[in-house]
Image 1 (cartoon, one colour):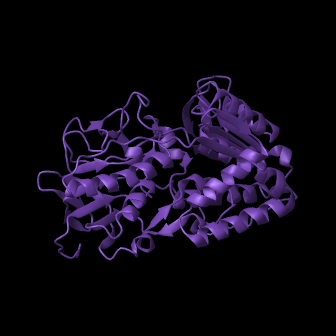
Image 2 (cartoon, helix red, strand yellow; image 1 turned 60 degrees about the vertical axis):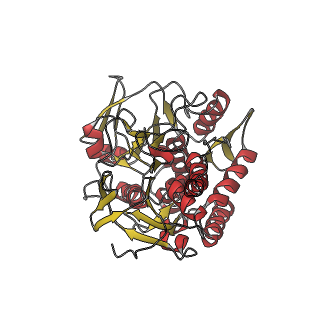
Length: 432
């Protein structure tokens, strides 16, 4: 990989997500050679992907070059590579561009979409874990609106204007709300020949409430906001299949004819082959780690973020697969790596829960903050502030703030561009 030989211990980080970036930043000007591997050359702020897919933001507002993140560290290197497997006996990472040795290995590969074995959904639905996939969804939404204006087939027009989302977690709720606002504010301006009453947005959830990880109060508020926006919610409903533009559910009387079926019903760990049997919790596809983020059976191989399953009394199922655990584990691991080379005792990780929030639409959001539960405009402004704060890069914060201000004043979404047509092409794989 053309990485210089160094007398410093080499830390190889696989993944440029929240955990990997947090760790790399904390290792700046520390006695390590840092090498980051990722199949893309940019970090993605995934909580705002849904805004790219619904024309609220351009992708460069939520993406940031990894090389720019590492530029302050003269002993840090980035290679755009896809990791194939790990040779733990020889302390070697094998990739599509070559091999690299490590002294310390950190797996921060995050998560991937979980289809729960449903092949018809995996092959035919559209999902949204990456910037290319968000752009696919944006194109699909806009192309369907364009086609709806010209088709003379009334049944096809209904399918084109029927949007179905599976999974009422934060992604599904935020996406549903954004689509409802697109229908309310943009369609009347851009598509005068489409009656907004023809557009239906369905949100399907297998459990008995939306936003299952959040409190009952926040869930009830989110459901109320969605219903006020005209989203049709179907609880205790599971998707059985999606073929020939038909979504079939566990309810024989409930099916949907749609050309836009979006899957946001779950994620699973993005594990890498090569580690010992028992290192991976197969059901969750996450690595079993101890309180120091060391993978079971290893002292110099760590996992952080979504891919790490750290079971404790407070978190019997591991930490939530969101940004904050990854960021905090990256920060903490940097301290423990320093303690390792200084022959000091490692410190156990303690997660500080900063709360959970989700936005539904304009002046509509919900927040769970310790014992506080609230929603509405205050929660919405708090959601905006927090997301702006954690965006990587000053430019991205300014551009995003400007876009949000513009949209708020004009009830508009400026990024309504079909720059990469999607219809007629096969769904890109989960690795795209």
